[in-house]
Structures are given as C-alpha cells and as structure tokens.
Length: 308
Image (cartoon, rainbow, N blue to C red):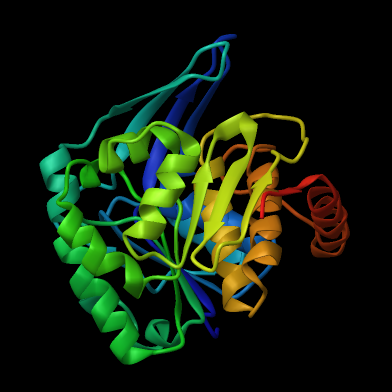
C-alpha cells in the first residue's frame, strides 16, 4: 500500500462516559487517530505513526486496515502498555481527560522518525502533534531533507506552552501550517484575541495559521495578507472529541493535493464536521461520502467570510 499522508502523533485507547450515563469502552482515540479520520474524508492511502504496547488488540489493527490506514508505522514498545484515558463529558460538551498512563512514560516512549518505514518519508503530507520545539526542529529538518516537497501541518499541545519565542521563530518558517486552538495559543503567544493570535504567528514566520475556535469555526491568516473566517459546518454532534485533529488532517490533505490555502481550509472544516458524527473510526461508504463531502464544501465556501 502506497502511503500518501501520515499522522505522526499518538494512539490512545479511550473509555468514554457521557453525561446521560452512556459509555463507550475500548474506543480507538488519540490525536493521530482523529487526524486520520479527517484525512480519510479525502484520501484512502494513509499511514499511522505512533507508539503502542504489545497489548494493542488485533481488532484495532484490523479496524485501521479496513479504514484504509497502513499500520506499519505503529511502533511496539516492549514492556509498556498502549496509552489509555478516561474521557468524561458534561452536558455543555466540556471534556475532562483523565490519563491512565504515566505521562513521563508516554512522552519517553513516543514515536520517533527512526521507527518509520522508509516509504513513509515520501508521503505528500504529515499531520504532526508531537514533542517540544527543539525536537520538532530536528524532525521537520529530517522530513524536509528526505522530501523537500512534503507539506507539514503542525498541531500544538500543552507540551509547547511557554517555549521561547526564538525557537518558534526558527521552527515556523519551516512548516506549511500551524493550527492551534485559543487556549493553546494563550499558552504559547500570551494573546487571547483571535486576530492578535493569528498576527503573532504570522510575525513569527509561519506561512499560514488556522486558529480553531470550536463551534465558532476557524480564523485563517496567510503570510501574503489573505484572511478569512470559516463557520463550523452544521452536523449532528455525537462526540466532540478530536474534531480539531480532524480539521488539521483535512487541511494536510488539501495542501498536499496542491489546493490553495483557501480551498484546503474548506476541506478542513468539512473534515471536522464528519469527525463530530461518530465515536472512534467511522463506517463510511466511499461513494456517498464523496457526494456528501462535496456538498459540505460548497456550503462552507458559500458561508465563509473573506476579511481581506
């Protein structure tokens, strides 16, 4: 299987509790998994780069394969267990994550570039949610050296809070897109106003920033001065977990396929809408998926506001 897009992140098994008492045990999750869901709306040649324990159930590998995901990039760490977490939801969709894996072990055992099959390095695009900025500098440099045309989408995490501005200024010109949310951006830039947040990332050298704002949609700034605001695409919400990751996955495929940043952002918004509709891995019919995805792209295009 040729791998065209890779999620370089993590795999977590979620045990989910909803406010009405419903539960969903042993559900595939993690930032990488949800990014793959967003990618899969547009592409069926995907690779998963994450570390797992020997205990990862065969049913999960089989489900990923059936979904169009190559699992050769899942690196088994002997003597560890696959990361696991409780996901507890309130009525307002507020989510509390309770990690059941030691965080120091989780970080120490994370996927490394050396774990990957060689052909993964020739993928068109990567979603990356991984490591601190000094580690990201090495990773991005190695990916660019192996494949200068690769599209790199960075999704930040609380791990990146408080890292020096000088390091961000070194990293951001080397990627194609950074997509944080508002809380993450406060921890990284110290800014809370959405437009100030985006302007700060552009000042730090990133070519493109997409600020994710939950139900309020997203705000996109490009270094060439273009700006636009996308609404959240209407859908029936089942689980809000991972919609932001899926947004980033959709954006990665759009950029990797050579679409303009504007058109790629429409795909990102649509990917997020599909992610909201199910728990874990979806079960899609590709023909009906394509038709519905294109319908939602048209809706997003019609409802997006150009700011410049």
